[in-house]
Length: 113
Length: 115
Image 1 (cartoon, chains in turn green, purple):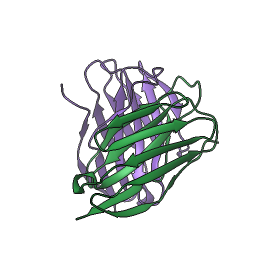
Image 2 (tube, rainbow over the protein chains, first blue to last red):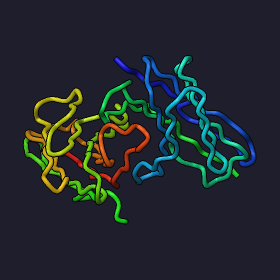
Image 3 (cartoon, each protein chain N blue to C red):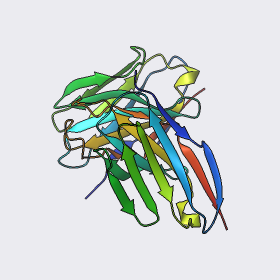
Image 4 (cartoon, rainbow over the protein chains, first blue to last red):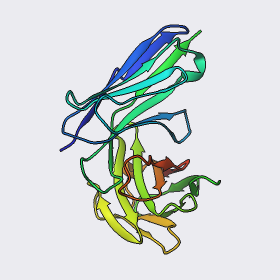
């Protein structure tokens, strides 16, 4: 059974600092997604990672995927308050023609001024 | 382009009642998935529909059911509501079910409270 773990669960950081959120998954997968959720809002797609070594960047966020280690990272560079949100990684079952995703527990990011 | 639309936004029901939630996907999207979000269990997959067929079902009791219509709109139904069914129910759509490079687009959800 595919399990997805994220850490940390909660991250309080100061503006201008860098940090990394980790996403580990238990069985082989060929796709990993990162989503952002603001309080009371829905999930917003950030990145789609499909191959080993894939790296995607958007603004201060950069995501990478290591399929051999079954690990994805979401790196935050020079954090700003607007990045405060909950970040989820989600993994799909390999080869499955399906939109069934297994989500991580989420990381609540609070960026302090 | 309109996003995924879910109605109603909020619902309050009592134990034992049943409820129907509605989801209209993004125009041109034929795959609809449903997820339950609770503080304790996080985001959990309920079911997935494509071309009016249920393609996948999560580990939920039979009280949870759904369907998809020919226009790709979807409904989910929960019968004999329990307090533990209180959650945010999210609907997500994508063009198809077998294109991994196409992420799910989520609606704003229906917040169900069971008293």
